Length: 129
Image (cartoon, rainbow, N blue to C red; front, side, top):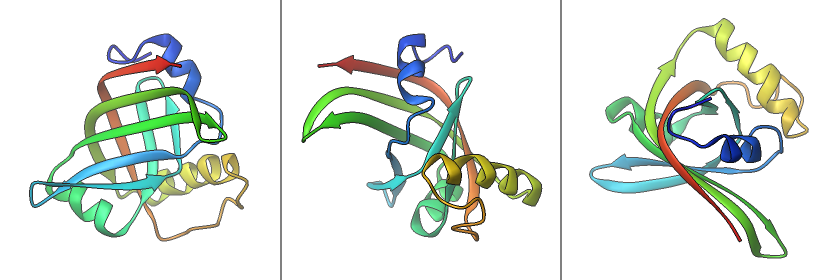
């Protein structure tokens, strides 16, 4: 369990295939993009590429939000802030692909070429509606 995220919030985001909104900074401006993820024990893992990855390499401070909604009406939301670490290890990347991709109904080998990023969640909050 993370010190920064209440256990109730961790329970909301662990298993369901929800989209995370991954916010980075480029030239002191926010850049937000949707990502598939896995959350366990205070760490959010995502497989990313492109501008998101470039931004994390320059500035590892990130923010993430996840929400559950029904017909456009939010049921709950979780917001997190933390520090991202780029993991270049091919074994770790393949392991992440084997967990994250099937969570979203994709073959474990789908979307190869992404890089693993792990975010140590330092603080967070959640709200139910």
